[in-house]
Length: 257
Length: 298
Ligand SMILES: Cc1cc2nc3c(=O)[nH]c(=O)nc-3n(C[C@H](O)[C@H](O)[C@H](O)COP(=O)(O)OP(=O)(O)OC[C@H]3O[C@@H](n4cnc5c(N)ncnc54)[C@H](O)[C@@H]3O)c2cc1C
Image (cartoon, rainbow over all chains, first blue to last red; front, top):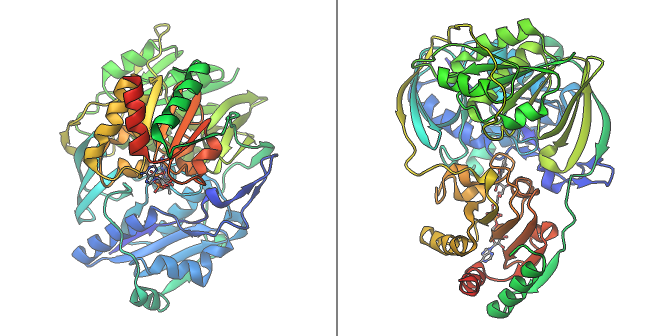
């Protein structure tokens, strides 16, 4: 029995350079395992250890997804193995082709009844891939999952819900998007990083996956971000009372207070 | 004429979706009859209600919703960013092979092609994207709309039988709607201890403001409820005044408050990124500044 964890190898847009015309230069933004995905790996690790399942990492994206650095970074988080699709056609792919390609990979892997994902990716932050992935598989999806126990086919899932929480019983295959604070993921040590290099990895050619494509999306215009012009007035707070006097006067003059 | 399907999971607050929808609108409602009735008076053209959910979570209706929308073949599908709504939207996108757009500001249909203007990569740039076919757009739902009385057609659907709600625990703290707040005092990891939340609440009280926070203060430590964090995956707010105390100004946070009228950032670090997006950049200790500001306004 296998538990799959979908992870993304992605850069933080905070580190990208954006031109006035909206062009994005990623050259200084270094990709990494997307911030919240190690939480999903950790949840999967604990469940796999409790049930004797194999924990398989799945990732689809551009060629760098198959780089030794990317595979090691993912495997050192606690995966048993990794299966990736690394193809130019999937570099920067949108939610739907990404979710569909992951679904095709899950089907190809076989013997999987539980797919875990993180809450959202650092570069897109759309929180949509788990839903598309589940839809493509015809499985239900649940998000904001804080705890999972049991075995696939008989899972107890707890999730954050409307400010409170909800406990669900799942008797079939399911995609679970794990809340960012579900568990604290381990920090990989030297041993994890060294053993990651010896774990099995497989690179699946994109041609082996069927039905991942979607209608082409054409970029007809780009622009910089929608930013209001801000005053950027610096107020020295070393003397808090004086700083507050200046701030209150400025806010009154602006008509805000 | 173009047509839009609006997906609703258990929450009738869809005014922003109705406002953004091109062409004739049909709402597909998963949830109780009361939700379907509230949606019917929010300005949509018609409502399809999938029947009482019983102990099925609303996500269990994703398959039937996808079937229904695929059969209708609309130009645009809209859904809110609330969790169960996203699951419905994802299933529809997977079925239609349609792209999903989030952070969208404009949705149009020209000659059967959908054109969406949206922020990309968490808000660092904008793009207008054209697709010759349906698109799925997921944005803030808005508030409870008012208008019309659309007919509600019941099309009872069978939810996925493999997932059931066993227990629901209600929220311990009251929920807020930060989207409507006129003033907000938000705090980040510059806050050192949970008891110091009182400092933030004190300032908010004299300002008549709501309190909010960055994501790390609502997760893990749980000093604030999750509906109080602002940002790309949190609340998108538009107050007249946004005071950010001890928040570094990472893109994922600031993008949620960019519509604010005036932004005051207080940070000990004069080079923090928030100062590039603030009107008043107070270089100083949040405790000292918040305290002095509270005294000055009392
Ligand atoms: C996919 C994804 C989605 C995310 N979504 C969101 C989101 O929606 N919202 C969100 O907020 N974050 C989000 N994040 C997290 C985000 O990237 C940042 O990590 C987070 O916003 C940082 O919070 P912070 O500014 O409070 O903390 P920090 O970045 O640690 O900043 C703390 C700041 O406090 C200042 N400080 C310290 N002490 C004092 C003092 N005494 N007085 C004044 N200043 C002080 C420091 O100089 C520093 O600038 C997301 C991340 C990811 C990967």
